[in-house]
Length: 486
Image (cartoon, rainbow, N blue to C red):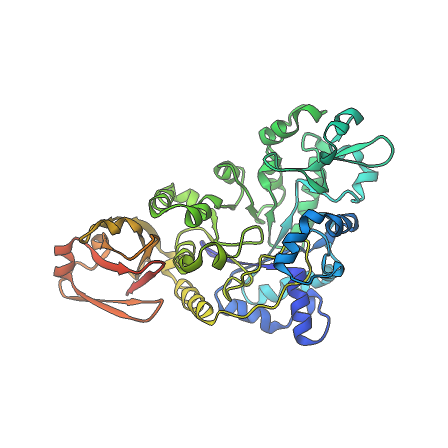
């Protein structure tokens, strides 16, 4: 895998449904036409993340079909939906085994083989925090779950589910939000639970090259202890679960969905990449100064950060970012780390599909955005952006204070190929001098830069750049340059 790999997330069940409808026959994962994988490889994708592979909980499906609070989300995503379109949450499962709608282990292995033949890898989900309430462990290994006395459960009935006579199992939860009523909380202070989940991860590693670990921080000992203290029956474990998991699957790529500034801790415990939700929030809600400060973090941390402007949990980027979507896309595509893309992002999809739905709506392709992404992906599928050295660049004034809206950096590889990226993250036009003189050839004369996003060429005399103190850049709101000097 490249140092700064390109990952593409696919919501597997609705994706297969759409392919099946388009081709007029029911497809399993192993029968996906080679042309689909070829098209993604041609875009420079290194890793396919197949979200939602696992066997969904029938009880979870019933809950998804009967919880009226979810209906407005279904209405927005899929107007006119039918109950049969609701297949249950991809994160309420009864086994880390392929769902019959998707195929079998043979189908997963066949898809992985096709990816390997094209130099790509396969990442799948690992769901450590919870299972569906109808998981076989519920009967065979009840102590793997957190239970509560009847009086405690009666005091917060939405947080527990009765399982059999007199037994009340906690619903899984993020402590900052209401419980997830379709999943049962595993007990990470129980050594048997931890050993069983390590076993689940080992089994997954037989069929995939990596796992995106759902809500990974919830299994941390201190987080788990604070969340569930009163219900815990065991003493805190002496090691972190993720240390044990890392040791169990050497060479297997681990990607953490993580929040609350716990990214560095999970990197230290062995995760190859951790979600960079803070950068996402700064691109969507904050200003250029916040983005620039974020990119000044330690480079070792940055190289192991997963950068995105959308995924299955976030709104579609064309909705959340509007006319700034291109600038934000350039940012997450040209800084160190794992570059994380989402099926439909390149085509300008606007509908965020809830994880309970198995059908996606038809949406028109935004041709101009698709063309932009093709140029962007072609530009970054090159040596400087993977083998080169990255450095954040300063920007100086050029007549007004709009330079503060510009953020810039450069990549330079061993051959001397230079890429200068400048992005306008402000509310209007911005101009400034990018401080890149130290990276330019020392000889005097004319330098020609090509913008890889639109093919335009810009020429400057070296003496003029020296006199100005940098490369003059003027960009409209939401615009960006990727300037090449070879």
